[in-house]
Structures are given as structure tokens and as C-alpha cells.
Image (cartoon, rainbow, N blue to C red; front, side, top):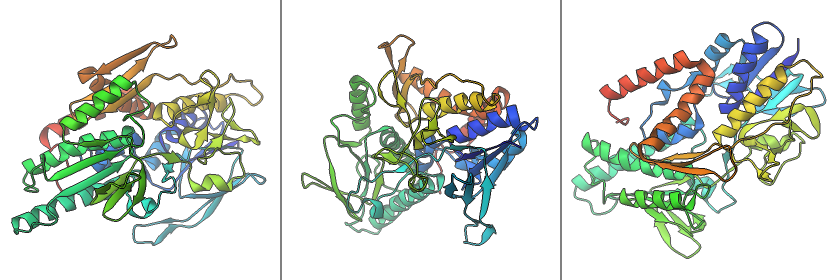
Amino acid sequence: MHTIVIAGGGAGGLELATRLGDSLGRNGRARIILIDRSPTHFWKPLLHTVASGKRDPLMHEVAYSAQAAEHGFQFVCGEVLSVDRTRRTVSIGPFRSDDGQEILPARSLRYDKLVLAFGAVTNFFNISGAAEHAMTLDSVWQAELFRKRFLANCMHASSRRLAGASEGTIVNIVIVGGGATGVELAAELSHTVRTLAKYNVHTLDPDHDVRVSIVERGELLLPHLNPRLSRRAARYLRSLGVEVCTSTTVARVDADAVLDTNGTRHAADITLWAAGVEGPAVCTTLGLPMNRIRQIIVNAALQTPDDDSVYAIGDCSNYICPVKGAAVPPRAQVAHQQAMYLAEVLAKQPGTRSPDFQYRDYGSLVSLGPFAAVGSLLGAAPGREMLVGGVTARVLYALMYQKHVMALHGFIRMAAQTVVHWLRSKVSPSVKLH
């Protein structure tokens, strides 16, 4: 049977597997296999809400095995180690439990078509000490680790203050990178520290004892947005007590501080790196053309130029939009559109000509905590941009995630889950307290 292997279960990979399973897998027209090193899926744009404690990942994760059983594809748990394009095989590493015990052995799968949807990892840009001392938000595990460290630092500083100590009673959080992830996390942390104080988890003054700073190399935060929105976001963050340091380049990251090229030392109990992404290391082993940040170059059919049986979508791919003449950005809406395109292309009979992939930018939205958001919406006409904020932006931001859930489960299940999560939010604290 014709076998389509999808390597990576992120937003694009899982949506593609679901669509192909429904169209090809259910009726036996093809064998659809999804590979991921984790047994569950979580929508990556919301990792900052896990890091701040606002969202419990267990309530929003999708079990790949359950999704596969419901939509006619197979799931294989393990990390892709290498691809043999001559033999058309994918080598998968063993899957281990949390204590290191091997649950599934290393395996090899054959494919007729291979879709690479690895996603991206943090790019430290070779800054000294960044990889060793800075935390990242590439996975649920890393987001939970940040949350626990933030909570522990607040509780430790509170304990020292009650004991009469003068040192170590201030918590300093430095976020490197003023893009969407950095800005959204900073805004959520401001809400989190106030909620923790409300429930007496710590006795710190949220306005003076917990300092959150954003260090951004460019002149503005959120450089992909209209400058008016960028300045509005910076003003709002400052009103929350967040220190915004723009036009500041990081020179070195130490265990307890971030040093910039001007010689300024930014004290840091926790440093979070959110300054850029690159393709994962496995991309370098495939023998395929890549750009300077290890993204796999694809053509208008999302195929690699050297091998028409291999496709790449999402953050690990580099597609040049012919209209704008630039690479499409690493966003969830790009992965979604590419997944929908490939679902139609791969479902067609072999030899059927398909139109080129066309990316449409619908705009961008950025959350500024529980009560605010900013963004822009792009219409069909070139150059038409509508700036949004307030309640409208908050609603539209929430709908982005609902759209992803609907792509996986359909409207009825999405609506039911939305109601359940809303009811749960009314009877539970707004952040995790432990």
C-alpha cells in the first residue's frame, strides 16, 4: 500500500495526518503514519500560557494515539534520527519512559512520500552562555520547568524576606527577545505574580519585588506588527511594571545575569531566550538544501528540489512567497495553510497536476495578558490593514486556537471543549498554584 509518512506532530503535521487519514486512510487508499517523539500534542503558540501557569497542559493536550484511532492514521512514538532517501526509509530512535527505561525499541519505516514537519527550535545565535544558562519554550516540558522555577523563586524570596534577610528578596526575570513569545510571556507573568500573591503563595509586592524585563535588539517590540501597535504594546507592558529595553544587544549570558554590548548588567534569577528559531539538528543530516538557519528549502509544490518524494512544511521549511519575494514567517497560520494544501495534493491520483501553493497572510495577533491584545488584520486587497485592539483583539486571538481545535476535531467537539474549559475557569484559580 502507498505509504505517506509525516515526521512531526506539530500544528501542521497533525492537521495533515488528520486530513489524510480521513480522506485516504479510512478507505484503505493509503497508509498514513505520523511520527513524533512525544505521545501528546500541544499547540505551540500557547506555550507561554503554560509557562505562566495560566493553562494546564493536561486539559489541552491531544493524545496522538486517540487522534489516530479516530481519523484513520497510525501513530509511531519516537524521535526521527535519520532519513535514507535512497532506500526511502526513516530511522526512529527508541521511546523511553521518564526514568529512562526503554519502552519501544529503535525502528525503521519505509515511505513512498515523506513530509517533514519537525517544527523549529530556539536559535541562540552563538551568544556566549545562552545555551547553558537560558531557558527556552520549545516544548510543554520546558514551559512547565520554567513555571516551577518561577514559582520556586517567588516562594524562596518570600521566605527569606519573612526571615529578615536583605539579600535575595527580589525576583528578576529577563526575557531575551521582544517578539510575540517574549511579549506574551511578560504580560502573563505580571498577572501570575499578582494572582499568586492573592492566594498567599508568596508575600512579595508584585509591583516592586518581582521584576520582569524584556531585552530586544531592535528599536521596537513586535517588529512584525505595525509600529503603532508595537509602541502601544510597549506602553501597556510598562504600565504592568515590565521593563522594556529596546535597541539592546546581548553580549553574554551568565548564570545570574544578562550582559549587553553597552556593558549593562541585567540581574537575572531566570533568563528566558525567545530571540529566534532555527531548524532542528536532524535537518542537517538529510542532504537537502537548507538556508542559513537550517530550514529546508522547498519549491512552490512544497517539495524539496533534490527529491520530489520529500516535502517540508511549517517552521522547518523555507518557502519563498513569489508575491512578496521573501520567506513566509514561522507562524501557525503558515503551517495550517501548508497542511491544508498538501492534504489536497497528496489525496489526488498520481500524475494529477496540482496548483502551486499560495500563502495568504491574514494578519497577526498578540496577547497582552488576560485583558488585552493587539494585532492587525489584512484584507484581500494589497496594502489594506486594519489595526485591532481591546475586546475585539482578545476575541480574535482566542478564535485562532479554536480554529486549530476545529481542524482536528470538528465544530461540535470544539464547541463542547470550549464550554467545558470556560466552566472550569469559573470554579478554579486563574493560574496553577503549585
